[in-house]
Amino acid sequence: MAVYRKLEGKSIQLLEKIRENLEQLNEKIEVMIEIQKHDKRGIPENLPEALDVMTLLSLPDHLRKTAISLCKLEKATANEVSEQTKRARAVESGYLNQLVIMGYMKKERQGRKAYFFVNKED
Amino acid sequence: MGKIIAVHSYKGGTGKTALSVNLAAIYARRGKKVCLMDLDFRAPSLHVLFKDYKAEYWLNDYLNGVCEIDKVLIDASRDHGNGGKLIVALANPSTEAIRDMTAKDRKWEMKALGRLLSLRSSILNDDDFDYLLFDTSPGLQYSSINAIVSADVALVVTSLDASDINGSQRMTSELYELFEKKTGILVNKVVADYLSSKEEQKKFNKYIKSIHTLPILATIPCYCEVLRAAGDSIFSEEKPDHPFTKNIDKLATTVEKF
Image (cartoon, rainbow over the protein chains, first blue to last red):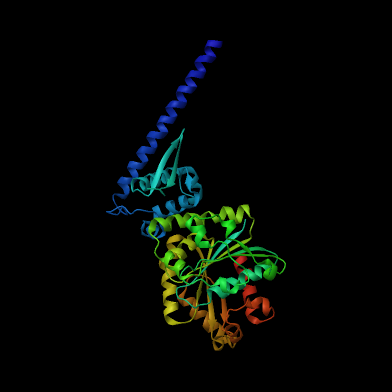
């Protein structure tokens, strides 16, 4: 019985790990889809140095909404941003990652969660 | 949860400061806890009205990261509370400070936006204010757009000057819409003739609505007594029964429910 329980615990752990990896993979695919979908639309040739209001104005509508939400939240997960914008988490995750690629934001992993924040330094 | 209101206009001299100050005073008279901030760093004005209070730190210092917001807040309730609380935060009027504020780069403006956005938690949540009013600089400027982005409600004051009407219309449709901000129009300094009879008033309202698709929250006539007071005192406190005060009182209720 004890052996059975131990095995059960291990397989749960394994399943958890698989789910975690799948989530991360999913997120990466979302980013790729987003970038493909929007091509280079809205990505300026020379990356501006800061996400100030004038830059916010120049962003395409879908990214501006995400960027403003993150400015308000300071540091947040895609889920927290999606609660503000009332759009799907997967959509926000794509937009946030696109903003990271554009150099306006930074991303930091804390355990299983990915936090996004406005790049205020350098 | 309190509300942040940004008072803005396309052109200068529309009456932004007079409207913000009187709106703040009326909310205070209703027993509310109100904070009024002078965000017009190019042409500060609230320091004149609150000349009896000495500012140790200015809003410039807060945005520069020199101090926290509590050092900037001045309690003017002693003279202007009228049952509530009126706290002000002033902009530094020295030429040196104005020059400094006009020479800021984009990185600084981005940080300033962050500082303004965090007022929601410091002023509204921690200090429990009912209203935070931003009196802004006219036109499309960093400080004003930062204030609009940080606010819950934006009030655009417009006179009937043709260039002002045109500019306000363009500014609200091209800029405000991008930020999806809840915005109301205040038509100020309206010549009395336009409002002389019900018929004229109807015609005038139709005309204004043909220009702006946004809600018109108030149409305030031009009063010689307000001009004569010359912004030296808070008009609604001096003359609580004057029609101007009654107009602002009505506006306060409209904005409260907006």
